[in-house]
Image (cartoon, rainbow, N blue to C red; front, side, top):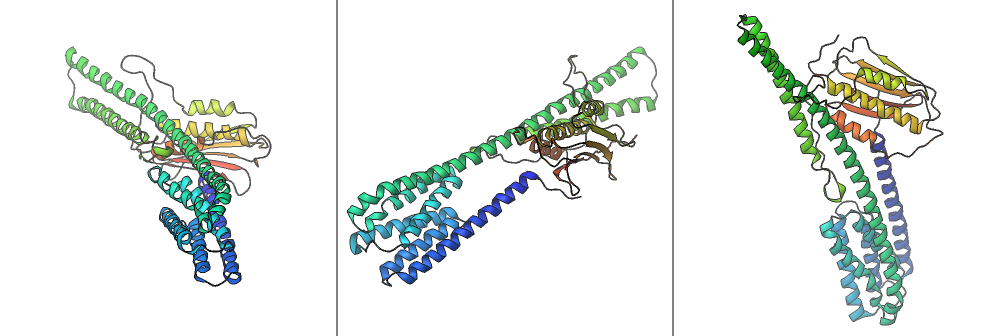
Length: 417
């Protein structure tokens, strides 16, 4: 079964839309400049202004090295304006200037939208100045008449670029925050698991000391079993702690400049154990398990949900059980938000051939009816959690209709019932 991530699919739609927009503008600008080339006089000044408009149009639609094209276009246009104003004074009749102005305004918007912050101001100033002084090619009167309208156009291009930059930055920060919160949530769970392992080490060590102080003789097999238990608990505690530190190290990059998170993808190692009381006797935070999963599904009645647990599921490590619970919880919440027309929801948790655990939530809704507000990053945070455990999370429409959320989480060293 193949499903696609909705966020990635939306990004691809935006990318295709951008390509179509650039192709459309390029075709329009090419036809316009061709018409200018046919209709205008064939002197050197007219050909040069058409060349300037072509360079500006190419800079408006180019994808690679847009900053280099923006700077080259601004310098070429500005120097041409100064030369024409000082030595030539061309006639105000070549329509290719409109294509040049339009291309440079688009370049300004793209530069403000996408350029790195340390180069943004300089390139935008050069581009804006090149547009504003462009009427000087003819006369001072034309400069007085047209500079103010061009200034308004430059301001609109700057505003559009800043708005798109703010939208991207806000979305990136929201996505980064969702990933960071999910990492910290998993880190707190792992803290509980480490507390359990350390408690087990302390208890077994105390038992060994008590047996030694009581004077009862211990056989070599009994001592080996006792020390093996201590060794296993210590190894599992170190494994869980190593994963937690890795997750926290990845989370520190979530507040990068412009909201861009540096994506560390910590892969989970083996771990097992249950949340327990710490050394001081304080209760650790409860985590989701299969019993809580039953309660969650039983309480979901609109539409009715059914839970199917595979007979060979066995005992799951706490981090796996918690992740399964969180995936089902988020998927059911999304059904309630976005699939009011669904009549049934099926939740299944099963073992795959390699021992991994598969959790699937399937509904038969078509997404019609109630559309409640949503932050849009719940599945992104869950994908971060599942990825940290070495698994994968997929979500998408089903071929027969409805929606499906599928999580596959590997289980290392777990034994089936």
